[in-house]
Image 1 (cartoon, rainbow, N blue to C red):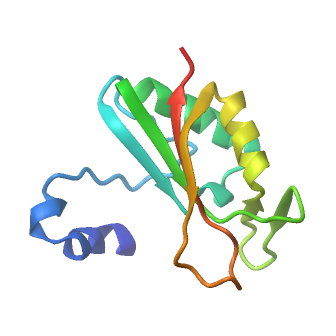
Image 2 (cartoon, rainbow, N blue to C red; image 1 turned 60 degrees about the vertical axis):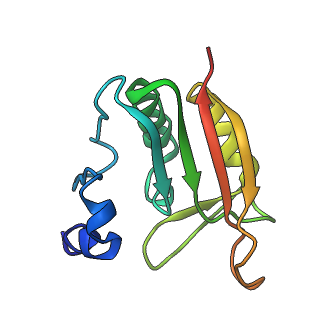
Length: 134
């Protein structure tokens, strides 16, 4: 609740009034059908199991309007399929692993790039735009 309640201040008046805020686990969240042009998922997929992530992405697909996309921005590992953090139990998946999960959920990649202005000492961070396969 602390982070979501501070989001409007972080975004500012111009943008915060244009946003909808949901305080729920992604395992339970179901977007309103045919409603969103974009669903942005940033730095949270590591807290979902593979099955929960596939199911969540499938629900997101139903929430998109025609031409809409889901964007995933998250850390990736390079030398392993995934790495589990002992402190919080999150999983950092490899880029190919994330793409495979997107494929299982019925998506195709329409755009991808890596964040360029981050230090080399941290995990690579891709930005992946996904559209439902037709």
